[in-house]
Length: 89
Length: 345
Ligand SMILES: [Zn+2]
Image (tube, rainbow over all chains, first blue to last red):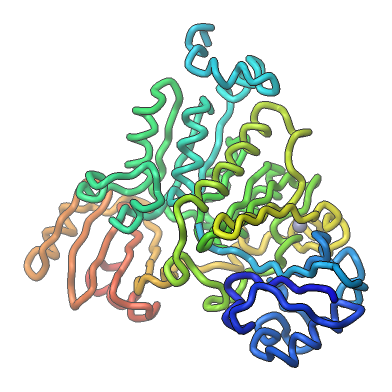
């Protein structure tokens, strides 16, 4: 299965885990599964059906915005990362 | 510059990719360090030691004891002396390297002053702790065509990315809009580790040295993400975002922060139960005059850089440019009221 990596600030919304193994063949399908298991996490990432504008998603270190956005295909072993903006300093 | 004055840089000049030519370029460079907190002190320390010819250190804040855990240029004496960060940093940096020019500027960077603060710089460095200032830096850098380096840290993890306007994606290509307040943790709410800051600021510093010494081909084109607790290091490929994303800033050349449409002059200082009220003045505040007005009901302390007093359960720190940080409230309107009650507008 593809794995979705959860960034530290969002782990409290994902039962404390740093990654989730989820079934699906596109990024959208993975996030649908994620939303069923952890609705509060999905709420943090999505505004309706759209990703929030300050959340970026990468498949194997490539930004999905220049792949096929949420329709980007994923295969077993692929790593999907949620990258939040980091404010501090 | 005489040859022997470069002797202090001999160990880095022996690094072949820098060399004497690179060092001479560093010595002729001007850098604006925006923000002199955790990231900014590490950045300024590296660049002063490396011999960057002129460093402008811009910061609006003063030093508190809880800064000392990670803000490496400051010590307990600076806290006791009520020095602004920019001034305390300048004193340390001059002791580290007296052959370069250090220009401290105690001010809040905003859309009215940023172009003047960065227009002569070869490079702008992000030592800030908030997105409002970062988008403002991004607007200014893209408008002026100057390179800048973004860095952010929280907890044990951080990000950095180098922006060459027109050649690489800008901050708005990467993150179109800042997260709303409360949606992302701050150093006050989530904590931050000193070594994590040092790692990110050191990455910023090495990219700065490459840009200033003419080694742009060696720059890292990725968004770098590091977690020093989990030992993860990732390089996310973002180069293709340029041109792919309909960026309002670097593609549309709409500079919303620079034009003042974004950002505000009265801001809550997130997680600190404090509000900053910025009332710009043409002339600096007259501290002795203000102190005498307040003396009947408050104990007032002031030096050349700040005036501090307590009133109605709030601590006020006032700067010569008319800005005040009012502790004990997160209410912007209340803070404006207190400002006009005690300081006047
Ligand atoms: Zn852009």
